[in-house]
Picture (spheres, rainbow, N blue to C red):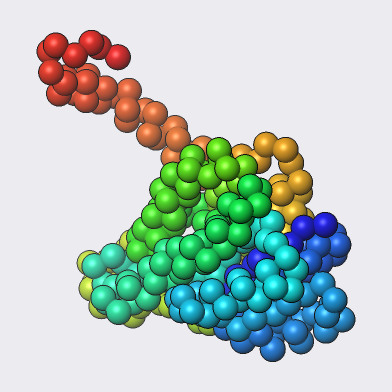
Length: 281
């Protein structure tokens, strides 16, 4: 029986992960902006659930929740950095305020939570950090540039974090979901900047239309994602990255193929920039 610490737990994938963890007999610290929403969702789990009101951009709230978790359950075994914010806009159209808001939650919020949780895991010499990225953390598309930039940043940080924590007995996994049928595309989770530049109607504008037409029609099943997340933490050697959803797999395969093709095509130019006295690789 493990102790889970899950951010963004009041709805969507976060709530499903909390439900799955509780269903497997684990104890869960579930954080959300309003803990009462979590308690209403899981009214009969008082013995194994601790709900805390946390804005991940507020370091003091995060630290208080972690201290309460350790006081209540004695340890933290699994951290799920799930709290997130979406932004749909052409890169040039995004206001400074909108860009900073999505970075504050998706990057700096994760850093806040990790800084608070990792001392406990390091003392235990065990733990598993699950950073919820996106297929957009590996390959992006018009309209998703700044949101993807936050997830690219998360993935770069997570790769280094894995190398730093592995000798201490702590695993790190980047989870890259495709489209799952949650409320992520609703206004409560996704901020859509108004189109202001006509030149982007055929690129970011098309993405806006697709998102509006496909909201709540995504192919991914959140219950199955949550089960996969629990299974992941029970494996002896979890991967650095886990793609979830056939659409995520297909898009990442296409990106890898494109990068490999371009690398081969431009290889001679790349290696020709070395000093002559350096051995060829």
